[in-house]
Each structure stands twice: as structure tokens, then as C-alpha cells.
Length: 522
View 1 (cartoon, rainbow, N blue to C red):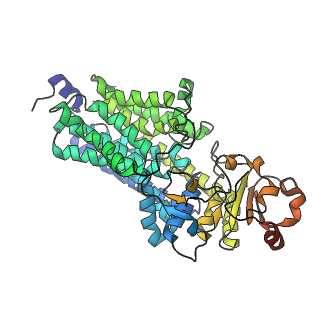
View 2: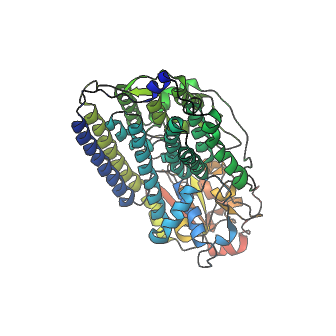
View 3: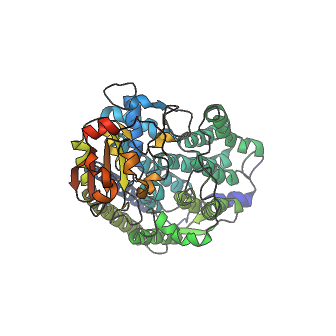
């Protein structure tokens, strides 16, 4: 086999100063590892110490998994309207949560699955740090970096895919060095698992891994051959299904000035979150101080340049799916690790302490915020507990944002927790989309079309009172009169807690006026 040119090989192999005390580094690494383990345990306690997590789409995913768990059971109303769709690139998170739900229940199983994805992100980030020869304390950044834009918007499948994408990057580096069937198989498997988890994440993983294989050990053809594995997998498994359908238009809008928001998206869903913005800036400064000089070989820079270009230039919406460009933020940290050499000597010894302080402060604020968020959503818990099973529920959310998570429309899908616990039908559900793992049966017409959930003013008592059993409203003021008008006598207020209001359709109105579920939404 041909050999990598000596200059390139020297560029890739991490350089470690001979004066470094190996024993001291090993002790520091163990302490940092234990600190990461303790922080992971604290996050697990937070996840299970509160009923709800501040993740926008999480209630919808919980409702879908509940349908999958109870499919075929007559005791869980509404499941007869759904089918399972396994020919979709959004499965890993669902499969894990489905299995865990057997022992823990739907919501708890989903929480544990998300926590495992977060820990997986931390572990593979640490492995990449070690592989590239960087200082061990940089691995601590992998834990909070798992809580970025994708986490807060509740992109469960994307969260599950990111660790596999980083793992594919790690295996691409190894395959570049060895070019053996073992490293090729490992890279192929990581890419296929990424595709099995999330199609967009797999595309990013391919774009990051491919440049690293332009040069390296052995023949070019055998180096790049593993990149064909996800393409073949998609052709055999996904293409025969209907998940490749478009659900809307493709919108392209360059946004170079939005790069200033990138630090915030590493730790939150919006630049409106000042604390997250500060954490993101500190994290980037730690990376700048902890990494060495830029690598000379250009292929090591291409993943980072691709991430930045994707953030600025990728279509805002592709085939109706979006927004996609903020998700590139999840790959910036790993790409920077690849782009820079390890630092031969630390700029100052306090950097590990700063990293630990950042992680500690972020965990503390996250715990406090989750606590307040659950106070804000106490009305939803009461609604789920008090309502009977099998209702068709329409959410009407006027104020979407949580006070403690600025810029996050955290209340948008909270009504779906009712379906996760007690079945029935949600006015708006992810089941209407062809890519969903749990879909409506052909011919079922949703009560709310996409976009109605964002526009509460589209509610019409004339149309919707006959259609639904119950309405869950989030509003800081009483909107009973303006919502129901002349149909006020057809509903009754059954719950008012905080900013949450629930209205049941009265039995007489239900019997005389309600139309069949599935009628056209005009």
C-alpha cells in the first residue's frame, strides 16, 4: 500500500511535549472524567425530578410513541387511526424510547432515551478529543454542547443522530490512517446508524467525513468506499417507502449576519437567551485557548468551513422541512477539534477549572429554569390528570414562550401530553407528515393543518366546537368571550390554573352539533 506523505502524516499525528508529566495528566484526566460523570448524573436527576422538560416537540413525540406502544389495544382510544412507518430516516430515538417505555412508561422512557443521547454526545466528543491528542479538559465541553438548538426544540431524532455523526467523524480519521476493512466497516456502520437516526444529520456527517478521506493511507477508492454505505442503505430501505415526499417548498435565504447568533445556538434555541449567549461565547473562547495552531493540511479545515457555510447558505426550508440551518451549530465543536492541532503547552493552568465552572454554572441554571418551567406548566399536569380518556383536544396557544427560556416556544405542543397519557386525538399531530414513524391511516383528515398551531387566531368556534371534545388554551388573560362568542353556551370552563384554561364541549351541544372526526378542514 502507498504511504501518506511524511509532511501530511506529521500534520495528522498529535504532537505531545516530552516535558509533560504523564502521571499528572493521567490524574487530571481521571478527575475530569469523574466530574463529567457526576454532571451527567445530576442531569439525569433533573430529567426525572420534574414532570416536563423544556423541549418544544417532546410532547408530540411522546404522543406518537404512546400510539406505537398501544397500537391494537381497544383500551387506548384513538390508536385505530394510526399506522407504523418504519421506512423513514427518523427511527433510532423512537426505537430506543419504545423499548424503554415497556418498563418505564412512555414519557419516562423518552426522557431516558434523550439522556442517553446526551451522554452519548459527551462520550464520543471525549473520544474525539483523545484521538486528536487535545487536552482532556476540553472533553467537558461535550456535555453542555449536547443542549443546543436541537435539544430545546425537542428534535428527538436529531439528538439521537448527532453522537453517531461525531462517531463517523472519528472513524473517518482512523480509516484515513489505516484504510483497513475494520476501519471501513466501522465508518460504514456509523454512517448508516446516523441515517437510521436522522437523514439531515447523515448528510452533514458525510460532508464532514468525505474531505478527511481525500488523502491518507492506501488507495483512494478503498478510502472512500465506506461513504457509499448510507446511500445504498437509503436506496434499499427508505426509497421504497413514502418518506421522501415533499411537504412544502424549498426556501433559500443567505444569512451571513446570523453568524453572530451561533454562540447562543450552542446552548439554547435563540439569541434572545442572554445567559446561553454568554455560555456560548465562553465555550468558544475556551476552545480558542485550548486548541493549538491550525493544521496545515486543508482537508482538516473543510469540515469546519462546511459547518459555517451550511449555517449561512443551507436552505432555510427544504421540501417543507425546516428550519435546518441552525442545526449545523451542533457540529461546530467537533469540526473545530479536527481543524486545530493539540496545544503543546497550556496557556495557563486554570483552563480546566474554568471549564468545570462553566459546566457547573450551566447545570445549576438549567436546573433552576426547569423547576420554574414546571411551575409554568402546572396547569397542563392538572389538565392531563383531570380529563377523562379518549378526548379529541385542540390546543389554542396565544403566548408560546416560557419566561425562563427566552425565545423558546415551549408551550406550543404541551397539549399532546394528554394523548401520551390518555389517548384520543390531537388537533395538531406529527402523524400528518409522511416522514413520521407513526402516521395517520390513509384517508384520515387532521383537525388542524400545519401552521394552525402557530396561529391561534385561526380558531373558529363555528367550525371547531362541533369537531373537538375539549380546548386547551394558554393565555395570560381571559379570552372566553372572544373565542366562543355566540357558542359560549356550548362549552364550559373545566379548568383554570395560572395561564392555562380548559373548556369541555357540553354533552347536548356535542350530540346535536359535533361533526365526525376526519371531515374536511375548510
